[in-house]
Amino acid sequence: MALDAGGYPVTRSAGGVIRSAAGARDLAVLETRISGCRACPRLVAWREEVARVKRASFRDEEYWGRPVPGLGPADARIAVVGLAPAAHGGNRTGRVFTGDRSGDWIFAALWRAGLANQPTSTHLGDGLELTGVRVAAAVRCAPPDNAPTPQERDTCNPWLARELALLPDLRVAVVLGGFGWTALWPVLAAAGYRIPRPRPAFGHGVEVRLEGPRGPLTLLGSYHVSQQNTFTGRLTEPMLDAVLGRATALAGYPPLTP
Ligand code: SF4
Image 1 (cartoon, rainbow, N blue to C red):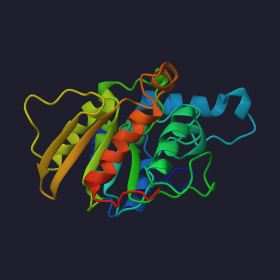
Image 2: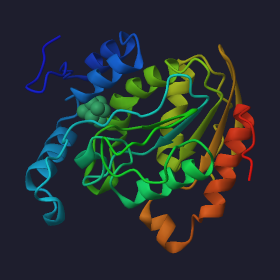
Image 3: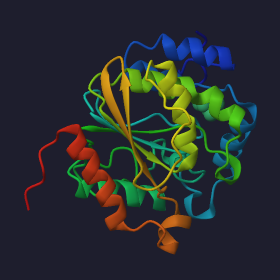
Protein backbone atom coordinates (compact mmCIF):
# COMPACT_ATOMS: atom_id res chain seq x y z
CA MET A 1 0.00 0.00 0.00
CA ALA A 2 1.51 3.33 -1.08
CA LEU A 3 2.15 5.87 1.68
CA ASP A 4 1.46 9.61 1.42
CA ALA A 5 3.75 12.41 2.56
CA GLY A 6 2.51 11.98 6.14
CA GLY A 7 3.27 8.25 6.12
CA TYR A 8 -0.38 7.14 5.89
CA PRO A 9 -1.45 4.37 3.48
CA VAL A 10 -3.41 5.87 0.60
CA THR A 11 -6.85 4.59 -0.44
CA ARG A 12 -8.22 6.10 -3.66
CA SER A 13 -11.51 4.34 -4.52
CA ALA A 14 -14.69 2.92 -3.04
CA GLY A 15 -13.40 -0.59 -3.74
CA GLY A 16 -10.14 0.32 -2.03
CA VAL A 17 -12.05 1.43 1.07
CA ILE A 18 -13.84 -1.93 1.22
CA ARG A 19 -10.58 -3.87 0.92
CA SER A 20 -8.53 -1.64 3.20
CA ALA A 21 -11.17 -1.54 5.93
CA ALA A 22 -11.77 -5.29 5.83
CA GLY A 23 -8.04 -5.97 6.19
CA ALA A 24 -7.49 -3.73 9.23
CA ARG A 25 -6.62 -6.12 12.06
CA ASP A 26 -7.15 -3.66 14.93
CA LEU A 27 -8.31 -0.13 15.67
CA ALA A 28 -4.82 1.37 15.42
CA VAL A 29 -4.35 0.00 11.89
CA LEU A 30 -7.86 1.11 10.95
CA GLU A 31 -7.20 4.65 12.22
CA THR A 32 -4.02 4.88 10.17
CA ARG A 33 -5.78 3.65 7.04
CA ILE A 34 -8.70 6.05 7.49
CA SER A 35 -6.25 8.93 7.85
CA GLY A 36 -4.82 8.27 4.39
CA CYS A 37 -8.13 7.91 2.55
CA ARG A 38 -8.71 9.95 -0.62
CA ALA A 39 -11.64 8.05 -2.10
CA CYS A 40 -14.08 10.99 -2.36
CA PRO A 41 -12.61 13.70 -4.62
CA ARG A 42 -15.07 16.42 -3.62
CA LEU A 43 -14.44 15.92 0.09
CA VAL A 44 -10.67 15.62 -0.31
CA ALA A 45 -10.62 18.95 -2.20
CA TRP A 46 -12.82 20.64 0.42
CA ARG A 47 -11.02 19.41 3.54
CA GLU A 48 -7.63 20.38 2.09
CA GLU A 49 -8.85 23.78 0.88
CA VAL A 50 -10.24 24.54 4.35
CA ALA A 51 -6.92 23.43 5.86
CA ARG A 52 -5.02 25.78 3.55
CA VAL A 53 -7.23 28.85 3.88
CA LYS A 54 -8.08 28.37 7.61
CA ARG A 55 -10.39 30.47 9.75
CA ALA A 56 -8.77 33.73 10.80
CA SER A 57 -8.95 32.85 14.50
CA PHE A 58 -6.97 29.64 13.84
CA ARG A 59 -4.51 31.01 11.28
CA ASP A 60 -1.46 30.11 13.40
CA GLU A 61 -2.54 26.47 13.72
CA GLU A 62 -1.59 23.55 11.50
CA TYR A 63 -4.86 22.00 10.34
CA TRP A 64 -5.19 18.22 10.19
CA GLY A 65 -6.95 18.39 6.80
CA ARG A 66 -7.48 14.61 6.63
CA PRO A 67 -10.22 12.09 7.44
CA VAL A 68 -10.88 11.95 11.18
CA PRO A 69 -10.69 8.51 12.87
CA GLY A 70 -12.78 7.43 15.84
CA LEU A 71 -11.77 7.73 19.49
CA GLY A 72 -12.18 5.38 22.42
CA PRO A 73 -11.10 1.95 23.68
CA ALA A 74 -11.62 -1.39 21.95
CA ASP A 75 -13.56 -2.78 24.93
CA ALA A 76 -16.27 -0.11 24.56
CA ARG A 77 -19.81 -1.39 24.95
CA ILE A 78 -21.25 1.87 23.65
CA ALA A 79 -20.61 3.54 20.28
CA VAL A 80 -21.64 7.13 19.60
CA VAL A 81 -22.05 7.76 15.89
CA GLY A 82 -22.18 11.30 14.50
CA LEU A 83 -22.48 12.79 11.04
CA ALA A 84 -19.08 14.08 9.89
CA PRO A 85 -16.24 16.29 11.16
CA ALA A 86 -16.65 20.06 11.16
CA ALA A 87 -14.43 22.07 8.83
CA HIS A 88 -12.76 23.98 11.68
CA GLY A 89 -13.38 21.34 14.37
CA GLY A 90 -12.22 17.78 13.69
CA ASN A 91 -10.74 18.80 10.35
CA ARG A 92 -8.52 21.23 12.26
CA THR A 93 -7.66 19.25 15.38
CA GLY A 94 -7.56 15.72 13.93
CA ARG A 95 -9.82 14.30 16.65
CA VAL A 96 -13.49 13.48 16.32
CA PHE A 97 -15.86 16.21 17.62
CA THR A 98 -12.87 18.12 18.99
CA GLY A 99 -12.52 21.88 18.79
CA ASP A 100 -16.08 22.98 18.04
CA ARG A 101 -19.35 23.63 19.85
CA SER A 102 -20.79 20.22 18.99
CA GLY A 103 -17.81 18.61 20.67
CA ASP A 104 -18.25 20.80 23.72
CA TRP A 105 -21.74 19.34 24.05
CA ILE A 106 -21.03 15.67 23.47
CA PHE A 107 -17.86 15.41 25.56
CA ALA A 108 -19.41 17.31 28.47
CA ALA A 109 -22.35 14.89 28.30
CA LEU A 110 -20.02 11.86 28.15
CA TRP A 111 -18.20 13.23 31.21
CA ARG A 112 -21.50 13.65 33.09
CA ALA A 113 -22.34 10.05 32.14
CA GLY A 114 -19.03 8.79 33.55
CA LEU A 115 -17.65 7.90 30.13
CA ALA A 116 -14.96 10.61 29.86
CA ASN A 117 -12.33 11.77 32.36
CA GLN A 118 -12.90 15.48 31.62
CA PRO A 119 -15.73 17.60 30.22
CA THR A 120 -13.71 19.34 27.51
CA SER A 121 -12.02 18.26 24.31
CA THR A 122 -9.94 20.99 22.71
CA HIS A 123 -6.91 19.43 21.01
CA LEU A 124 -4.79 16.31 20.74
CA GLY A 125 -2.78 15.90 23.93
CA ASP A 126 -5.31 17.71 26.14
CA GLY A 127 -5.56 14.67 28.44
CA LEU A 128 -8.99 13.45 27.31
CA GLU A 129 -9.61 9.74 27.83
CA LEU A 130 -12.82 7.88 27.13
CA THR A 131 -13.91 4.82 29.09
CA GLY A 132 -16.44 2.32 27.79
CA VAL A 133 -17.40 4.35 24.73
CA ARG A 134 -16.11 4.78 21.19
CA VAL A 135 -17.02 7.94 19.28
CA ALA A 136 -16.98 7.92 15.48
CA ALA A 137 -18.60 9.57 12.48
CA ALA A 138 -20.52 8.05 9.58
CA VAL A 139 -18.46 10.14 7.14
CA ARG A 140 -14.84 10.87 8.06
CA CYS A 141 -14.11 13.97 5.98
CA ALA A 142 -15.53 17.44 6.59
CA PRO A 143 -18.17 18.07 3.90
CA PRO A 144 -19.20 21.44 2.44
CA ASP A 145 -22.28 22.76 4.28
CA ASN A 146 -22.09 19.71 6.61
CA ALA A 147 -23.81 17.74 3.85
CA PRO A 148 -22.14 14.63 2.44
CA THR A 149 -23.83 13.09 -0.60
CA PRO A 150 -25.42 9.64 -0.37
CA GLN A 151 -22.60 8.33 -2.55
CA GLU A 152 -19.96 9.74 -0.18
CA ARG A 153 -21.84 8.24 2.76
CA ASP A 154 -21.91 4.83 1.10
CA THR A 155 -18.25 5.03 0.09
CA CYS A 156 -17.25 5.79 3.68
CA ASN A 157 -19.50 3.16 5.30
CA PRO A 158 -16.94 0.31 5.30
CA TRP A 159 -14.69 2.26 7.67
CA LEU A 160 -17.53 2.44 10.20
CA ALA A 161 -18.51 -1.18 9.60
CA ARG A 162 -14.99 -2.33 10.38
CA GLU A 163 -14.74 -0.03 13.39
CA LEU A 164 -17.90 -1.51 14.92
CA ALA A 165 -16.69 -5.02 14.12
CA LEU A 166 -13.51 -4.27 16.04
CA LEU A 167 -15.55 -3.56 19.19
CA PRO A 168 -16.27 -7.11 20.37
CA ASP A 169 -18.25 -6.02 23.45
CA LEU A 170 -20.51 -3.54 21.63
CA ARG A 171 -24.08 -3.54 22.95
CA VAL A 172 -25.43 -0.04 22.30
CA ALA A 173 -25.10 2.48 19.47
CA VAL A 174 -26.18 6.04 20.19
CA VAL A 175 -26.88 7.64 16.83
CA LEU A 176 -26.74 11.43 16.64
CA GLY A 177 -29.12 12.66 13.96
CA GLY A 178 -31.04 11.21 11.05
CA PHE A 179 -28.06 11.08 8.67
CA GLY A 180 -26.12 8.70 10.92
CA TRP A 181 -29.32 6.72 11.53
CA THR A 182 -29.73 6.18 7.79
CA ALA A 183 -26.03 5.44 7.30
CA LEU A 184 -25.98 2.78 9.99
CA TRP A 185 -28.58 0.37 8.56
CA PRO A 186 -26.47 -0.99 5.68
CA VAL A 187 -23.48 -1.18 8.01
CA LEU A 188 -25.42 -3.30 10.48
CA ALA A 189 -27.02 -5.42 7.77
CA ALA A 190 -23.58 -6.21 6.37
CA ALA A 191 -22.45 -7.14 9.88
CA GLY A 192 -25.20 -9.77 10.08
CA TYR A 193 -27.80 -7.95 12.19
CA ARG A 194 -31.45 -8.61 11.36
CA ILE A 195 -32.88 -5.29 10.19
CA PRO A 196 -36.63 -4.66 10.67
CA ARG A 197 -38.80 -3.88 7.64
CA PRO A 198 -39.72 -1.12 7.29
CA ARG A 199 -36.69 0.41 8.92
CA PRO A 200 -37.67 2.29 12.09
CA ALA A 201 -37.83 6.05 11.60
CA PHE A 202 -35.31 8.25 13.36
CA GLY A 203 -36.41 10.24 16.39
CA HIS A 204 -35.01 11.46 19.68
CA GLY A 205 -35.27 8.68 22.23
CA VAL A 206 -36.23 6.04 19.67
CA GLU A 207 -34.92 2.67 20.75
CA VAL A 208 -34.51 -0.33 18.45
CA ARG A 209 -33.19 -3.71 19.57
CA LEU A 210 -31.49 -5.81 16.90
CA GLU A 211 -30.37 -9.40 17.03
CA GLY A 212 -27.00 -10.16 15.52
CA PRO A 213 -24.14 -12.60 15.38
CA ARG A 214 -22.59 -11.21 18.55
CA GLY A 215 -25.83 -10.93 20.49
CA PRO A 216 -28.26 -8.04 20.80
CA LEU A 217 -27.42 -4.48 19.89
CA THR A 218 -29.68 -1.57 20.83
CA LEU A 219 -29.81 1.56 18.70
CA LEU A 220 -30.72 4.76 20.51
CA GLY A 221 -31.62 7.85 18.51
CA SER A 222 -30.68 11.33 19.68
CA TYR A 223 -30.99 14.68 18.02
CA HIS A 224 -27.58 15.74 16.75
CA VAL A 225 -25.47 18.00 18.96
CA SER A 226 -25.28 20.58 16.17
CA GLN A 227 -25.53 24.26 17.08
CA GLN A 228 -28.76 24.37 15.09
CA ASN A 229 -30.28 21.99 17.65
CA THR A 230 -28.54 23.13 20.83
CA PHE A 231 -28.96 26.89 20.25
CA THR A 232 -32.65 26.51 19.53
CA GLY A 233 -33.34 24.24 22.49
CA ARG A 234 -34.43 21.36 20.27
CA LEU A 235 -31.77 19.36 22.11
CA THR A 236 -31.17 20.18 25.77
CA GLU A 237 -28.59 18.82 28.19
CA PRO A 238 -31.22 16.80 30.13
CA MET A 239 -32.44 15.25 26.86
CA LEU A 240 -28.91 14.17 25.93
CA ASP A 241 -28.17 13.00 29.46
CA ALA A 242 -31.29 10.84 29.41
CA VAL A 243 -30.19 9.10 26.21
CA LEU A 244 -26.67 8.49 27.52
CA GLY A 245 -28.08 7.32 30.85
CA ARG A 246 -30.21 4.79 29.01
CA ALA A 247 -27.16 3.73 26.98
CA THR A 248 -25.03 3.11 30.07
CA ALA A 249 -27.86 1.12 31.67
CA LEU A 250 -28.31 -1.02 28.56
CA ALA A 251 -24.54 -1.53 28.39
CA GLY A 252 -24.58 -2.87 31.94
CA TYR A 253 -22.33 -0.19 33.36
CA PRO A 254 -22.87 0.52 37.08
CA PRO A 255 -24.90 3.65 37.88
CA LEU A 256 -22.94 6.74 38.88
CA THR A 257 -22.74 7.42 42.59
CA PRO A 258 -23.61 11.02 43.53
S1 SF4 B 1 -15.36 10.55 3.32
FE1 SF4 B 1 -14.60 8.54 3.94
S2 SF4 B 1 -14.38 7.36 2.04
FE2 SF4 B 1 -14.54 9.56 1.47
S3 SF4 B 1 -12.42 10.29 1.36
FE3 SF4 B 1 -13.14 10.70 3.43
S4 SF4 B 1 -12.51 8.89 4.62
FE4 SF4 B 1 -12.42 8.34 2.47
